[in-house]
Image 1 (cartoon, rainbow, N blue to C red):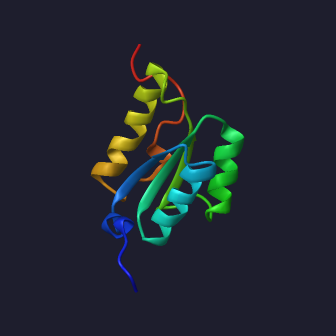
Image 2: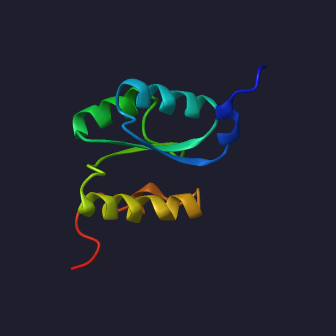
Amino acid sequence: MHSTLLDSFRNRFCLVAGGSSEIGFAVARELLEQDAKIVIIGLHGTTVESAVTRLGGRGPRLDGYARDIGAAKDVELTAAAMIPRAVHPDFKDAALPRIGPIYN
């Protein structure tokens, strides 16, 4: 088996912005093949859901969120959802915030 740059991501948490289509989707697929734990972020819920399904469905190694990481509010939501998972990879999906503000 040959070594690739993505081998260094084995058993790592990865956030793939734009992971629901084209190059981002290809990166997400390769990271999963390298045993990374990933979350894909895309602008549209339908494309994110489709990508998650095509990659094997939600589980301990894969999740996806519809977010606009160019918008401050979505950056906060994304960070709130990702940090616990990155710090503790076994963090349960049910506890991740999916909608709503972080603070009032």
